[in-house]
Amino acid sequence: MQPSSLATQSLSDEDLRALRRAKHELESPALAMKLASIVGAPLEKLISRMPAFANEKVTDATELALRKCLSIAMRTLGRRDSSSPLLVPDKPSNLLHKFAVATTGAAGGAFGLFALPVELPVTTTLMFRSICDIARSEGEDLTAVDTQLQCLTVLGMGGTSASDDDADFGYFIMRGALAQAVSKASSEMATKGFTAHGSAALLRLLHSIAARFSVQVSEQIAAKSIPAIGAVLGAMVNTVFIDHFQQVAHGHFTVRRLERQYGEQTVKAAYQTIDVALDT
Image (cartoon, rainbow, N blue to C red; front, side, top):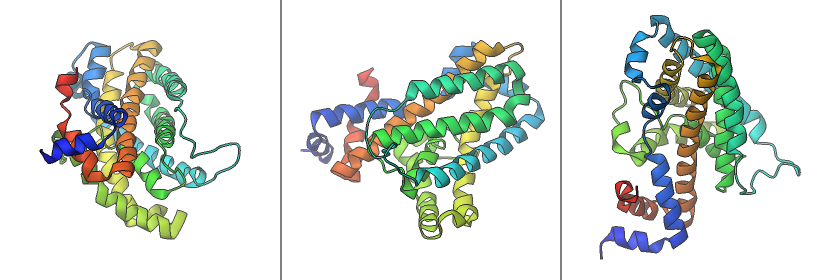
């Protein structure tokens, strides 16, 4: 019997179904395809029409948004009280977060690129909170530094930078590309606490995530660059945006939950036996 078959048999039927759903979520169509179906136009053409200063604005706004997310995480996620049981794995509030992000998208649709410096940090923070909520629902300890960084890396798993050669090789390659940077940053933050907020390891991690995330932010902005897009379509674009990352988060933290139970190699082997094309 092949090792992959043994890995598949070692998972319960329920967990194998969960892993199959996770692979569907992690390898779902790219955000660009989802957005293009909403706006009815290829994003490549829309991106090429964006003004030259837009790329710089996107990069700056992305870096700022990620820093804000991390600052909030370090200041608030480490606190636990009786009214907020962070470790109880109940269902995440996906719809609530989608509604909130749709509201910011409506404003962005009305004001266009000029709303980016205000809208993106708010939207990203709401998405990050949704990702944290999903992590908690899969049994993650949000008070742990590594979990906080894992939530942040979800924003870097759905896009690629110009120098990124890993995106075409699947979830585990993308995850592995960020793993060393996460480990170093986590180690510094665990020992230094909030004083590590400006550490070299953490800044390298943020830069790596921002390079990937900014690609998809550019796609989102391009989708809202159509003249007179309006508030309704702006809200729809933002809803697709957060839904994409919620799917990635569900997939990522499901895999991590199963790894804690069965071991990393067993889950990876079972994941690789699943043919998404046959399940659709």
